[in-house]
Image (cartoon, rainbow, N blue to C red; front, side, top):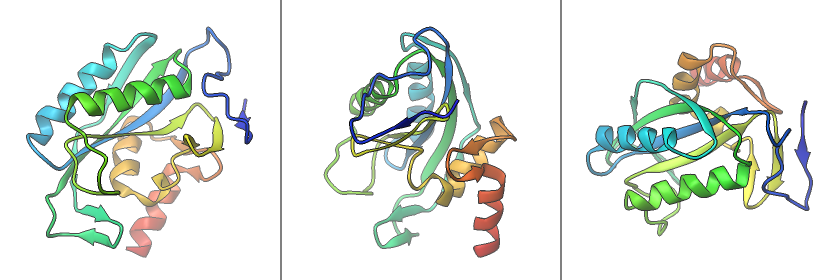
Length: 177
């Protein structure tokens, strides 16, 4: 069931108030003890209310991506993906993700700057939203091999609403690479 949120975003809209959905969260860190931070963030995801299950990928390292493009001189990122089974609404889940980032010292001063922790909501079931407060699916997910590869390790049939299969997007990136 594809649900599209129009301009009048209703952040707590869910396919069913009681039916759990899968949400995909990308995790990344390039400052501090990256592995410890990702592990702690995954543990915090597991303790969220109305989250029934969390499956996390093995971390992968990637070059930092800035507004100007890849920056090999910046500290490298450690990235992972988690698939959550949740009954939280998408905006509530996003609020929890931001709170976890803040607890790990995330500061939003420079767009695409170095960070202690970055948690991005990639998909929430097959929901799409163009609301500025919650873009779904994540607008750059199909352009990020460090999101697609870990996600595919957990779900070989992964798909981005409005884009298509994640394995096809990854193959395109690798071919273009």
